[in-house]
Image 1 (tube, rainbow, N blue to C red):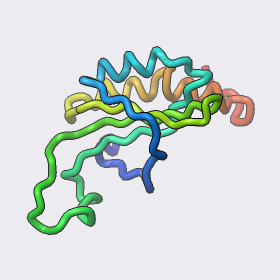
Image 2: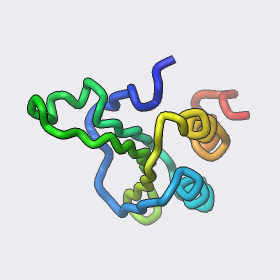
Image 3: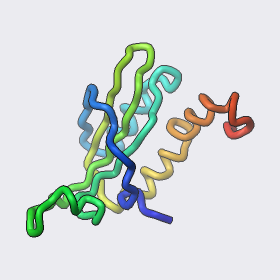
Length: 123
């Protein structure tokens, strides 16, 4: 399986309100408190500047931060706005982040939202 930090999503998410969290636990708590029916998570990015797909953003020898960031992107359709939550992460956080992304708040909420046309995915 590809690690979360090795996935290069095309383009980038829309700018909007930004919430910086101290840790993944803090981010998870804040996102989990948002009503899933009115706050849809549509994208996540694990930013690791050391990854080769970022090479074109740097000149040879330029300093690349070793800090990694998890960014969760949410749309609030009733308010017509985008919002993001970010926190520092390390490779050691991958299992917890992956479990949460696959869990009821993120993937489960998306499956519930799209279930009427994909049929039987939500459980």
